[in-house]
Image (cartoon, rainbow, N blue to C red; front, side, top):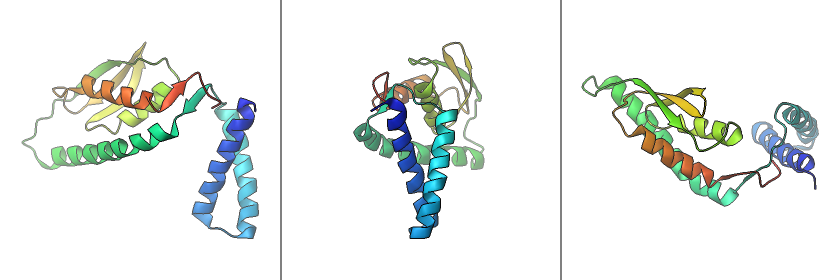
Amino acid sequence: MSSVVSAALVRSAIFLMFWVALIGFSFSALLVGCVAAGSATWVSLRLLPPTPQRVRLGALVLLLPRFLWQSLLAGWDVARRAFDPRLPLRPGFVAFRSAHAPGHLRNTFATISSLMPGTLPCGEDGNDIIFHCLDVGQPILEQLAAEEKALAHVLDEGTGDG
């Protein structure tokens, strides 16, 4: 099966599941949902063509608790710093040398790493991703390296059908 057909089937199924989750399951709604899912799939294939990348579902499921925990910690850390003036803020920028070339994996890493406490990706400089941090005294580069390594187990570059 070609990568475009495979990607179209997966995306169609996801869009249709999203439709059913929002609208509910009924025959008339399902007909409209199929049209909406087909249209959304066509647009998504035009805007984001399939790439040779595969998602490991087992590793993704194992990453989910880490992702949720990091989200909780990030929210708690920012709220704590906002309401406790004694906590130090040493805002600044750090450059993280990503092990991945520009593309989906690197963008996914930057998106997920924005949920780390006090970090926000704000640009790139060559092979580096620039992060704004609330406290540059924290071990940010080590945390980013750990997050990148965890995500690399979920996404394979160059071995799938997108």
